[in-house]
Structures are given as C-alpha cells and as structure tokens.
Image (cartoon, rainbow, N blue to C red; front, side, top):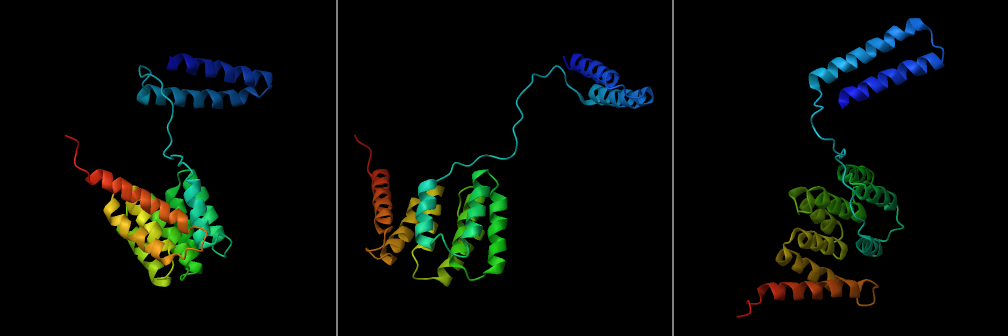
Length: 212
C-alpha cells in the first residue's frame, strides 16, 4: 500500500508541474527528490504494519475550575503576580507542565518574596512531578509558608497535594491548619471546612473494619 501511495504522489507531482508549465529542466530535481524518498522508504519503511493514529507527547489536562477559583480567592487573583498565574494555568491546561513551572520561576526571579508565586510554583511542581509532593514541590511550599506563616493558602495547597497523591494522613494536618488560620468571616472558610470534613469521612471509612 505504501508503494501505491508513493506512485500516486509521483504522478500527481509531475501532473502539477505540467499544469503549471514548469521548465522541464526542473523536473529532474523533482524526480531526484522522489527517488531519494523511495530509497528511504525501501530502507526504513514497513508497509506491512497497520496504520495507527499519531499520538503526541502532550496530554491535555482537565481544568480544575473549582480549585483554581478557590486559589484565586485565597491569593487575590488581581495582584501583580496574576499574569504569571494566568500564563501557568494556560500551559497546564494544554499539558505543558514544564512550561508552567518555567513561567512561575521567571516570575519569582522578578518577585522573589511573592507568596502568590511560590504557592503557584509549588502547585505546578507537584503537578509536574506526577501529583506527588516531590522535594522541589515541598521546598516551594515551605518557602511560601516562611514568607507568610499566617496565610492559609500554603498549608491548604500542600495538604491538597498530599491528598491528590493519596497520602490523606499527611494532608489532613495541613488542611486543619489552613482552616485554623482562616477567619470565619472570610468567604472561603466554609469551602476549606467542607473539604476537611469530607476528608475525615473518607479516612474514617478507610479505617473502619470490614463488615463480617
């Protein structure tokens, strides 16, 4: 089948040259190119293999809209660092997690004491490393907590990273701390409380003895 298509391409190419009235001196160049292609196909082609769709290395990442909205409430979206978060979010959505990390690192070079950027970088590193709290991600979370030890966002998102990795026991203390740091009058207080309560229910169900 591959040779058939190669022949069709050759006929089509020469027909196009004739229609366009290209100088016949140039036909030899086209013929040489086709011969090189045929030689390469003969050496490396595998026409007996079934065709299959091409899969790129980029994986589209579902947009966790509710969590992004909560992050924006906690970190105040409309700050000077917002542009970096927006760009990193866009990179993450199309599966370019490495690019998201690079964007946030660029922002930190400009604003090395930004709570927003260090928290965003920590989230991006955890996502980049397979939703695991890798040493780089943990360092970024800890740096965010050093910058703003009384802010609930860093412990909340560190807890979230542990929960996403399946380590509920490690994540719970951070969610409890985030809730303790959040005044009841703040809009996202109840959102943290609900997530913590749900986590407690899941952990209790895991610890419950099997029914006899």
